[in-house]
Amino acid sequence: MTVSSCNAKAEAVEEKKISNNLIMALGIVVPLIGIYLASTNSLFAFLGGIAIIFATLWGANGVRTVAKYGIGTGVPSVGMVALGAAVAAVVVGIYFASKTVLLAPVLALIFALLTGLLIGLSARYILKMNIPVMVRSMTEICGAGSLLILAHVTTITGSFDLLHLKSLSETGIVLLVFIIGALSILHPYNACLGADERQGRTLKLSLATGSAQVILAGIASLYFIGLPGMLTLLFGALAWFVTYSMFVRTSFEEGIVMNTGLIPEVEHK
Amino acid sequence: MIDVNTGLGLVALMGAAATIAGAAEDLESDIGSQSNPNSQVQLAPQVGVLHRIFNKAISGEPPAYAFYSSIAATVAWILMNVNFNIIAAFAIGAFVASIFHGIYASTAYIGRLASQRRYGQPIYLDVIYNHLPPIMAHGFVATFCILGLSYILWHYFEHPFPFVMLAFIWGITVGAIGSSTGDVHYGSEREYQNKPFGAGLNAALSGKIVTKAEIGTRSSIDNAWFCAKFGGPATGITFGLIVFLDNWRTLVFDQFMAIVVGFVIVALLIVANWLLEVWARKNYGPYPEKLAMLEGGA
Image (cartoon, rainbow over all chains, first blue to last red; front, side, top):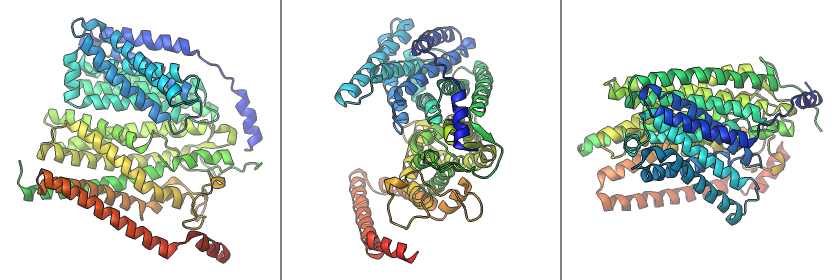
């Protein structure tokens, strides 16, 4: 295998880009509907899983957009900042909506977007990071993070009011939610980092990491809502199997796959 | 509250669990080339050095270990709540965490190598099959020990934090220590084994890691074998000492004295490190002369 033949193969794959606006719309509407439906009855808690998957998709696309500018080792930090801001926004949102609980997801999203905007503006104009998409991406990632955390809270406890958030915090499971959320948002781009990274493949991985979280949310919800948690677990396992297979198939189509063998010779320039 | 003698025994047990966890954590990250040395493995194909080394980029080690530990702790905690045997609950929790570890590790290897196609870097299927079991197994041992020491702290010492939170915090700690202590042995010694000791890394050498073994091609499992001689145990001792000394001082002394003893321990360690560095420089430095001698001799 020579480098020149690999280049020829590289050009064969066309870049089909999905617009950020479409992903943002999907990332706001689907999780919000999922969160509201999941909170109606614990039997429907598994619908929160759909919210988790789509919020992860939106967040991962945001990380990809900003990290494309060459933030190599900063990719994990971007995910952590987003989820950190999102946790704070969710707590504030749920607290302010304690009288009219139904407003909580919308308020949490608004607070998260504002926090993200502030972080983005600080990074762009105070820290002088010369990344034009910084403001928009940080806003998007924080918004996705807040919906992701709310989706987890609803899937695990069956509701998104202050009482349930408190019980999630007292058991420490909110930290599980934080870390699996952060890792699932940052992992897709981090795991596909490289010159031949492609949006389609990265987003397929984000669907897989999103589904993996649903399995974990299902396990955690067994403690809070009991047997209906099995529905979430099974839904997550099925979704993970499908999306993980999609990702592996795409990667094997796009990469050079060898069963075994020595290191191939390359033409040194 | 338990008496001091029982407490000391428990603290020693925590130290032992932490030592095993630290060693397993470092060797696991070496098999996967995670964290700091990962940048060189990632860079290698771009400078024309193709390899058969595992590229496991799951964030840095601290978040990754917080991830595995909190998954394991959640599962174990849910099982403990239905009166499951505690050791079995830890084992099942660590097993579930290692499954997720394997899933994330495989996506990182496949995804990153598929993104390096233009350099001609293949995705070796046998590398995935051979490396995932040791990665998951070392991760299992590390996570199991983290759960053990978190449980002792939570149950016997009645720590106010919930069990999952303690496991999360110890997970971050073990990752941070593995990243700062053990990675040096793998990153600067093993990846650049063909360069003289203490030479430092010239920017022009970035990515030009060793890819040939004594016989055949180097694999990441060889790296674990090499690092098990020094990097892994050093990480284990570091983490074990931190857990042991920190809990020992708060157990034996009262509040104010515990803080003073903490300062004394840190001061002693600083002096010891300084003496060690001076000794090393006298015996192995000054580096440029030693380098010239080594290059002349070779």
